Image (cartoon, rainbow, N blue to C red; front, side):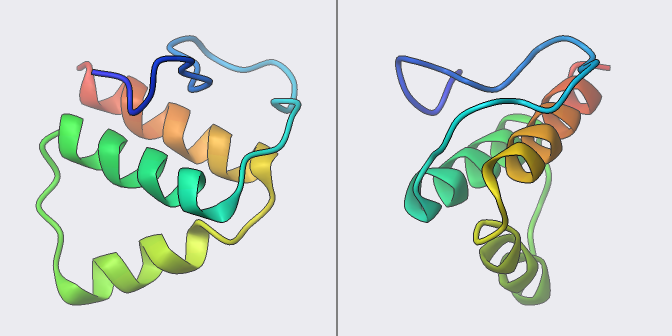
Length: 74
């Protein structure tokens, strides 16, 4: 289930950096949604790292979210 209607997270391998911008709050939401959809149980330190990652640039966060999504499909 996408974290919002206009889901920017790729289901396919990326051959170039995702383009765009997303505020940190939506990046955080995307990361948590992908981890939840993949069935990943999070501890306190895991959540701390997700919070930290959410502050990175959009291409990095979108790629990490895509990797989690694709890994969760296997």
